Length: 224
Image (cartoon, rainbow, N blue to C red; front, side):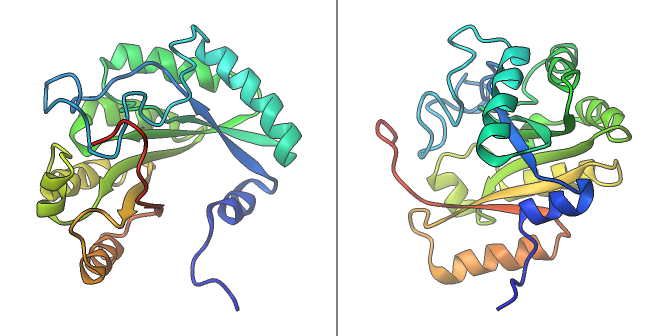
């Protein structure tokens, strides 16, 4: 049976004509839901290391992370091109000058054709999006906004630190800049019914988002 969606690998093959693989980068950023600006302790599903590799804490530079990732991905997936994926914590949560330095350290590597930035909707503004837009002519640029649910009651329960209106504002601010928008959702969050999850899907579908990353809820040691 034909799929009713376009998977990311197929999409990248259509754009670049070969296997393209994301290289996860840990640039040492933090999160406003951990440093006290928005909250402390983070979302209930996030451990102290976030989703990163720990490379920054080990003193591995962004350039070296990219170089190692290229070797690994070429061997494992026969990838021909790569996307620099800033994954750990909130990768727009720093001064623009710092972000520019980090992004461009990754983008200068041979074979990098895209930039993917994982962040929160409460961590972007016009200046940051201007910076990302400046790369869009030469690279495929994605911004990945963590949302998890369109229901404010769920966002409060998981200690998310922002509401759905904040996400809507970030999406509106990102539009018409040549930047692709991906939304992260989690299915199975505490208190959510099947209908609530389907309602989130309908809402996101109606917003014209370019991509969605679906996570199933699972429990990591040390999380609330």
